[in-house]
Length: 609
Ligand code: ZN
Ligand code: ZN
Image 1 (cartoon, rainbow, N blue to C red):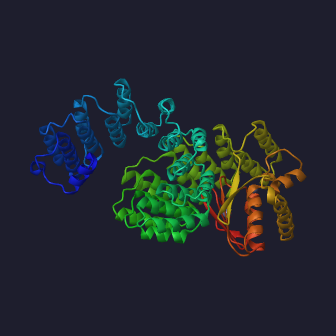
Image 2 (image 1 turned 30 degrees about the vertical axis):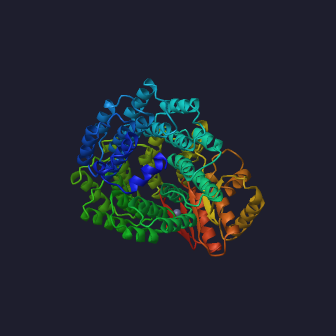
């Protein structure tokens, strides 16, 4: 019988060492003690239990045994009842700690969010000439991710290369994570693309890296690749990233599908997953479904209330938002400044002036939250929408925080709707002084001048705009067709296989729209070209291309959902109203702030957005 099989035999029939037959060799005796030490450690449920085992090990004289010492440190450092201080004190008494002991302690420190100490311990490890192994680096890289320190991260990466762990799967996954956390997505991709073999964790890491910097479109593309490479069982965190991506991109079908796979794979959805699902449905325009999930959430926290209230605000459901808000207060959940922004914007979208003012007072007096410029922005919007322009201007002048561009822009938009050129000019001038980079602001002012037939001022404003050479953030529109998200930019010709059909459709649509009375509003074109060229450019705004593409590729009568990164221009708004009537389609467009539900030739925003 070999030594190990004896050991195995005895372990199964575990009896206290005193009762062992006296014929055993000292080596077997040692092995038995080691095994007993391990089994005692495994049974520890508290630090008190552990301390007793520690005493026992000292009594047996086994503390200098590397196996026992290592397991003592590991148990104390990594158990949920453990204590890093106690583990460190044991560690200090070990003469020649092994790589295993160092690794365990490093992992324990990382687990305790004590990242700096973890790196110091690594230095100590190198100084005491213990050779790190492939288990050392993932933990260290995790520490660097936690601190988001690129420099240290790169040094650790260098060491891992030097010691030949560059190709280790766990090291590579940790590197993707670390570079992602440090917002160095290019470096994450470099590692990812070099990998011979990728695990579910590798995909999770690269998807999370993209999600953390808002590259939602890329998230979905990667998720598709992951599935097609046969990784069918994504981690919960990946599904959450994918759900957030669907929320941002308005990809409802894919979102639904991911929801399904969550239900199939995970027995109980935790509150984080539930909230992200709720957010997804709300942002994809499914208010009912969002509300339903909200009601099903058993332990609602601040975040779940916050998501629900802001969802209701986006959908223009002011009264309902206030109801959920008071439910939250009854539930004993403390509101924060973010929730108040949602509550106030819900009031403003629904024209609830008195209620909004009351909430603002309550926030200051009852909940002692100092209003920020965002809160004041909501109030200005609230008053502006209700046509109380002078009051809004007075509020801006009297508020204790510096007004920002959002505040002045709300006032300017309100002036446009209520046709008040005098206050509109004040708002626009203040906005331009803040170095606003948004050409849309100049367009609003110049259109207001045009309405008042002040042609000199129209020309001046236009000139001012061109002289500043304003660069607009490139706008795009996203649509989902057959669970795939398509991205369109203005004047897009990148969709090779269907360019011709899209532009043909655009031509056909325009013909029908004009027949119904639509006329293109070329004042929305910013570049200085002739009228004909302006009409051509206007035709190919991203939202129109997205609509044309969806009309071609989806069945009659199915709703069209578009997500945009910017506010739509007023020509696209008018155009979409006509489309909803002529093609009998419900069109839901979401921009950064709110939803537009186009149906039978009208929009839910009542032309004010
Ligand atoms: Zn447009
Ligand atoms: Zn609208």
